[in-house]
Length: 150
Image (cartoon, rainbow, N blue to C red; front, side, top):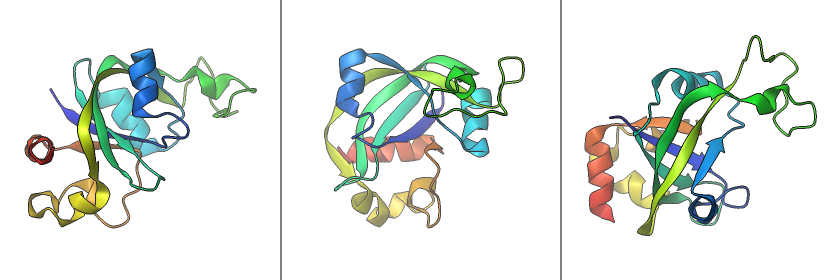
C-alpha cells in the first residue's frame, strides 16, 4: 500500500462533499508529473490525505482511499467541460484520473503551518518550498507522524 496527499479547494470540492457522495472521480489534474502518479502508481486501497488548499486555513482535513486505479479523464475530451484539452482524444488520452472514496474526516484540521514546523516532516514534498503539485506521495513514516498529530 502507498500513501498520497491530494489537494482540493473546498469551494470546488471539499471533504464534506466527498463524505456526501462517498466516491468521486478525481478529475481535472493537468500537470504531467501528477498525471503520471494517477496513471501509473496509485492503486486500489492506497490511502490518501485529503487536503484543503487555497482557503483561510489550508491543511489536511480527512482520509480517503483509492477506489479505482488510473483511467482516462474523459473531461479532457469534452469541449463543454471545464478541463477540456483539444490535444487529448479517447484514442490517445493525455490526462488520467482515479476514483477516491471517503474514509473519514480528521478530528481537526492539521494546518500547513503546523506541518511546516514539525521536525519529522521537513522532507515531505508538501512543506518544501516551491512544491505546488495537487497530488504528492507521502512516505509511510510521514503518514504515521501526521496521524499522530490528530
